[in-house]
Image (cartoon, rainbow, N blue to C red):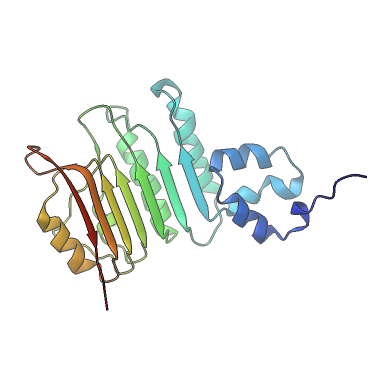
Length: 211
C-alpha cells in the first residue's frame, strides 16, 4: 500500500512556513525538482538563510544566488535575513553588493537581520548609516562588521536583542547611544570587540530589565 503524502496535502502557506527554516539554497535546489506546485514556493519564503563556507574562486555563484532570490522573492515582508560568508574586501563591488542586499531586505521590513562577514584581512565591511535608523528591526546580529554609529545616534524603536561579534571602535558611549535610541531593548552582547585604539579586546553583556 503506497504511503500517503500528507505534506503535499497541506496548504501552501504551511509548506512555505516549514521551508523557511531550511537553508534557502537547499530549498531552491530541492523544490525545483518536484511537482509544478512546489517548484515556485521558494518565491514566497519569509525567511532567507544563506550560509557559505567555500573558497573565494567559487564565490560568484553564491552572491548570484542571493541576488536572484531577492529579485524573485514576493513575500510582502521578511521575518529574517541571514547571510554568512567570508568578506573579500578587495573583490570588485563586494562592499556595494552587500549594501544592495541590505537595502532590499530593509525595504521588505525585515525583522531579524543576521550578517556574518568574517574577513581574513584587516579590512571589514562597514555597516551603512541606514542600518542605525530603522524602527522595524527586532533582532540584530553582526559578526566581522565595522560597527560605527552614523551619526552618534540610533533609532531602533522595536529592537529587543543586539549581538555584535568581532567588531572595532567599541566604547561605552556606544552603549549609551544604543540604550537611548532603543526603548524596547532587552539584551546586548559585544563579543571579541576591540576598543577604538585596538589596544584591547572587550566583552560586554547587558541585560536590561524594563518595567
